[in-house]
Length: 154
Image 1: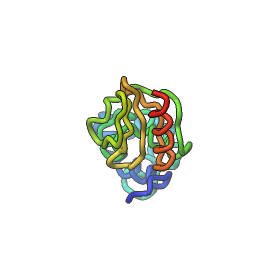
Image 2: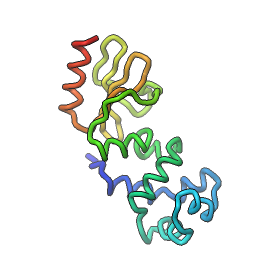
Image 3: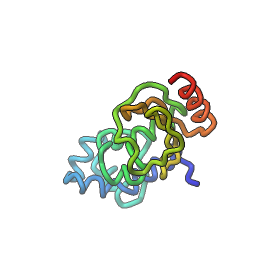
């Protein structure tokens, strides 16, 4: 199983920086300007000579959060993965999702609510009946506890 932590996220973003940049038709100069680093830094990352730092990684994930390459490597929104890495558990209404038709496995369903697990990153989330993300975590026990609470209240 893959351990999704800061180092893993940095590695994935660094290894795919060139692809993300080219998919969006940006020059190295423009990418450097957007992310807030030097062109030399972008070149070093793209050539595999260095890795992006955490701040640069977050900037790339935020700017390109809809990028297909990043979605494919993280199993969805890269900012959700970063949020989970930093906070462990998120409990608050989030953005509307597509309902997990791709890259998600339904674990439980109850009155339109779903407990799902991401097939790539292996994190859990709970969606409401309109597919808004209410909760997410990497911790299976916490996810099951939250699910039990939802089943009791709805």
